[in-house]
Length: 384
Image (tube, rainbow, N blue to C red; front, side, top):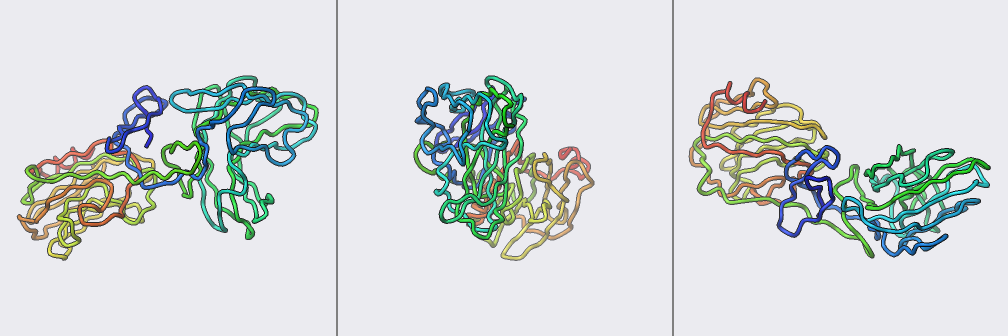
């Protein structure tokens, strides 16, 4: 599993090692990166197998699409790694003999199976490493193809590629009734007789069947599936069921799973737990269940995707509450047990109540637990 370190370099974490993630541009810490299971359907995202030359050899499985690049000279400049991202560098130059968009497929067109209504997120790192965008533009997206690999419908947009290596995203839903395959593509749009000279650094390609992308899953010869992140720990001796406060600061990438968990204290069953959960409507809830009965469920309000949310939830017999982003606490006077049989704490999943779902995808910047119940005004201050 990959993440960015404090220098903005893409790194790969070993198994059972948390990914402390950073913003690749600002280098600011983002906390632990938690993600659901995903598969990279692009078999050679690392762009290996190229041979330098004119035209040279494209990376394994990559192909020139359609009518090719008529009138243009293609040159494989070389391959390497920048900021941890493996890449191939390709130059296109000369006066085009047609007006249109010439296509570079980063996978064989009849390999990634698809059907009508599926949503795919294609990502790739791109950089304008030489030449310019004079008389041309760079497109990125995917094409739908039928069972005979005939092109049907293209979904792509113009990218503002610069001299800085950046990751670009194209998310699209298949629309053609005859679609059998999807193929990620990079295109160069040009006009007859207007000479171009552009060199692109391309790497870290990914194709996920999902409405939003996750971190890069390196591939070289076959598809790869990244397992869901799991984080849990026993609650002894630090947890108190008599009273306590849980503070969190998190930034969800998206809220698509059914009730993704932020923090969950439980006994490994659905009978006894304290849950801090995101609902399908993006609301943050605090819930207490004992002996299979829900004693309180407090709605703190919306926690939007790609937005940092802070909250503090406290519990005590007759006095429980939750505050989000410093707002007035939502309270409950429910009578709760002072000996809830909690034994496990999990982050980003339902593991603490015996489940494997409830997966959270995004960053957890801060998580803190205090074995006491502060005043509501103090709770608000914690959540600011």
